[in-house]
Image 1 (cartoon, rainbow, N blue to C red):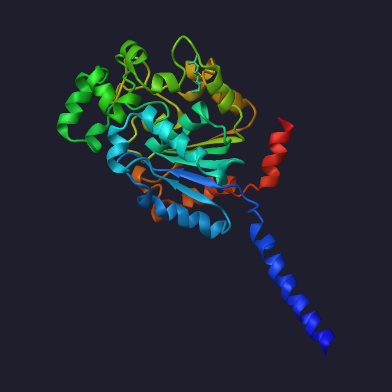
Image 2: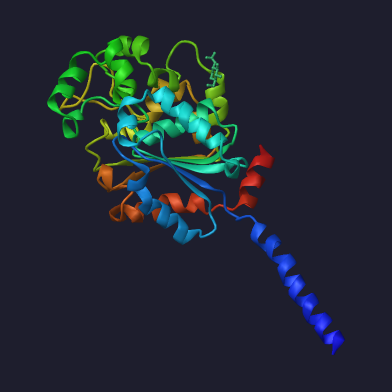
Length: 313
Ligand SMILES: *[C@@H]1O[C@H](CO)[C@@H](O)[C@H](O)[C@H]1NC(C)=O
């Protein structure tokens, strides 16, 4: 009888002592960080958090918020938003080993800013959802009040506008490239378009396992919509019937490989996909099919596959 009790107690003890080890087991999939768009908020893209949880229950997900959300997305300088993003990532030890990063709309520029300027906690796959990666020109009528449209048409590169509105900081005016090069306080630097290139930017971009770019043929917010694929208007051409969008592989940005997009492309690590969703719908149930098709397969790469990629570099 004593022996039975002792055995039973031993069994109970074994269960108790082994439980913490089981709990501490890491998820076999990397964490995911999300960054929302302009005038948005983390709480407005929780559908995406749910989709990831459903597909990968153990995944750690960080739905990033910068400042108060909607207002700071417009009025905090893009450089400061990137700095804030970096600080929040570095403050989270769960992201230290690396993570996948999804940026929606303007959030895709902040996310890329993290990769190029920070990336001490390395991004594995960078997923850009309808982001103005090649800059924005025109199209503000769709979402901005008339006074703002006038401001953008007249003085996008004045110090006052550059220092107060995030949109201005990635405004790329094809009729005024000289002013853009000289005065843009964010995108001209991030896209390494100036004479002096930052080698770190390219080093970090080419360390990605995959860069996945989504543009939508139904996008009436990002202008030109192909900016989602790093494309921009040809100089002296813009919205309207004469507008010509330079194909990515014909651009100097690509040919001279300012940030490493060409290198990714040539090693099979650049994915360019087309979506049929309206711009704002991408993080909503109306566009889950695009998430399932292009984003989920990248999020479902196991740590073992990631480690394998890192060891072969
Ligand atoms: C290049 O970018 C890195 C990361 O942001 C920065 O630390 C460095 O100062 C930059 N170098 C130059 C020459 O601007």
